Amino acid sequence: MTESRKSPELAGPVASGSVFVYGANVVDVADGKVLTGRNVLVERDRITAVGRFEAPAGVSVLDARGRFLIPGLWDMHVHGFDEAYLPAFLGNGVTGVRQMAGAPVHADWRRRLAAGEVFGPRMVFGSRIIDGPRPSRPGSIAVTTPADARAAVTTCVGERAEFLKVYSQLPRDAYFALLAEAELAGIDVVGHVPFEVPVLAAAQRGIEHLDGVLVGASSEREELTAGFAGLDAGDPAGMFGRLSELTHRAAGTTDPARLAELRDSFLANGTWHVPTLAVHQAKATMGTPEFALRPYLAHIEPVLRQGWARAADWRSPDPAAEQRLFERYLEVTGELHRAGVPLLAGSDTFVPGFSLHDELELLVRAGLSPAAALRAATLDPARFLGVTDRFGAVAPGRIADLVVLEDNPLADIAHTRRVAAVLFGGMVLSSPAVLAAAPADRPAAR
Ligand SMILES: [Zn+2]
Image 1 (cartoon, rainbow, N blue to C red):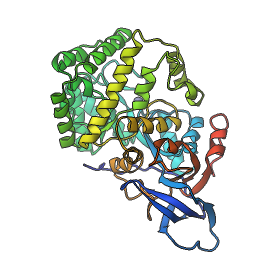
Image 2: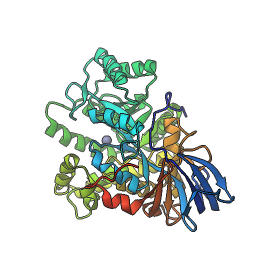
Image 3: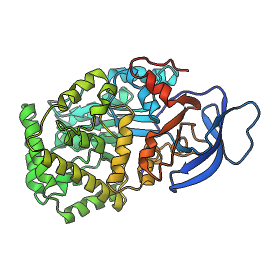
């Protein structure tokens, strides 16, 4: 597996004092084991000792006896543009996120995160979405030719993007020109596999939403790929209807040999996948009493909330087919995991923090052990980002982004929701206090 070429900044706060975390059951996410009754010393923003030792004089003590200590969680697929909604990540134990669609406000956040002026998680910032000539999302960079694609890489690097995000309608020749230019610039490419590109040929570092996988594994692959390539961006409503039709057809025609071929190519290329099961579940339950985001709508920032609020009332012509499609995403996730294809936990629901816990539960439902699901939100994001020296473990030298849980997440992944306290850059946060203050009142950064 290749590590990211240039480490992202991931700026965060630096506590001024020291904290002695007393008597915690430390979860070793790498081995899936619990080390009982350990003390953890945090000095400023770093873990400096883990073991059985006395508290140094003058430190504040956090009594964690009977509780469980995990590395801070990451949601590797989020979209956020409104600062008031960022604290909800921290209140949920999510101390890091990957911003998947660059926006002008992110440059401001990035500067102020480094100065400790934003009360929100660490962030890795993606480029603006790079799409075809008629982008489907506002703020995207429109690309038609290979020359446009090369220029887009230069623009995004100039805007200090930490990775490039490619999108569905990027033309095939432009896509390959972009990959080559990104390689020269030393910047990772992740995102959707463009409609015109067969997933077997998609040499990007990460794939979101299992894009292209159902199509690539279908016995009707050639015909479906041609169908996707022929989608008309000039007619968005027609395009989304046809997209849904093709996706359902792909889901119903999986050829195990073709899926095995894909698995092998992902392993050979070191391709990471972010299944975003939480958003697939939300889409599958739209318009039903089980709509997965209903309890969370108030936590979504207003501009993004409108879309989901409408979706809550939209009714699929065939709800059973939506459910079958969702089950297929779960099965494919399980199959990729069993083959050793690396996965990252990312929700893509726009719900800050809460949805990551849904994603973890869905990863377990897909066949990951609770330890593997936890890794997909802790150690594996650190590996993907090339920052295992700073993140992803409760160990000396790592940054003190830690979550104290009431109960053992390895026994039941749902226990990640039971957050007792969060350490963030060594600052001790009370989860209920942070959540009570979000989103309406933003607590002042300390
Ligand atoms: Zn997204």
